[in-house]
Image 1: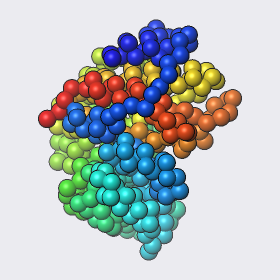
Image 2: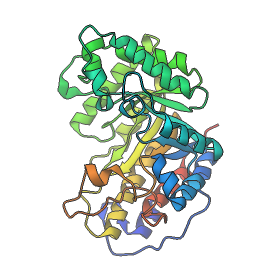
Image 3: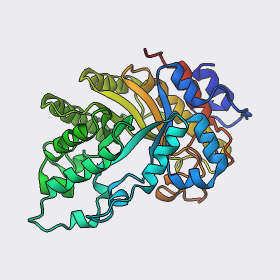
Image 4: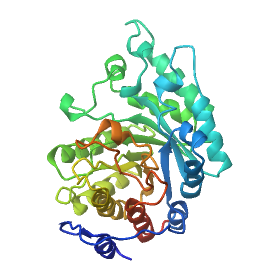
Length: 365
């Protein structure tokens, strides 16, 4: 079934949402991880350890469908290293063991992220050796899982054009204390601590053909080129892909060109945090599900057509647990519905769109 047939069957029109026809979903085989593997790709999801511990149906389905696992929060600095002399690897270790037991790849998120720096680092005295603190943190966390991580998000969301710096870097406590070379420091330290992991810069808001995202794409490419020219081991670009239903704002040709430019720098690409914000979609759950599926079906075939793209990770696995319900709430209330599985752990139309995109992707060697 091609994309047009999928959209017609599911009641999603190519020129806008059409809510006439209903489509009954049956469980699909093979699993998403197998569909991805057949094309030389991976599929997986971000998850918190408590969901795998407490919800057997969730954990069982996750192991069947996912070929890679990302800790949603348990390896972020303020969680894993909450005090200067204390680390807490409880969640990260549990997820590492779960991944190993189920033959799932493990991906680290995240070593440096301005939104998750602990107070003790941000408020360190002016004469504190912040460079040593950052290095010690990366060595401790990346080093603990050395050889077990498929990849690491070394830095996250480091570009912010509204901060009006010539280099496009986001103003953060680390930038203020260490200068722009903190990015280079982070990658070089991570490379030494875990030389087998693919080292990733994870970025956001580059998917759509609107002015501020076009400008961000240019800034990302410029900074990526500069880092690579200096020998900084940025080996992959994670593109978060928090989508909306924007039929007129996604330009497939322009996005293909952006991905090709990233690949031209010798950098791999990961669709790293895929989901769909449904706040602008109708209140009716079935109608909303079709809009979410359309966003998947519009975006993924274009992304997966680029040979440098290694795989797809959804930011969450089931609509039971999605950050969007709390952070981007609907005016009418109720849970968000952005993911491949519903609260009942049955596949959604987003699952179908994702499955079809993986089936249609060019095979990698």
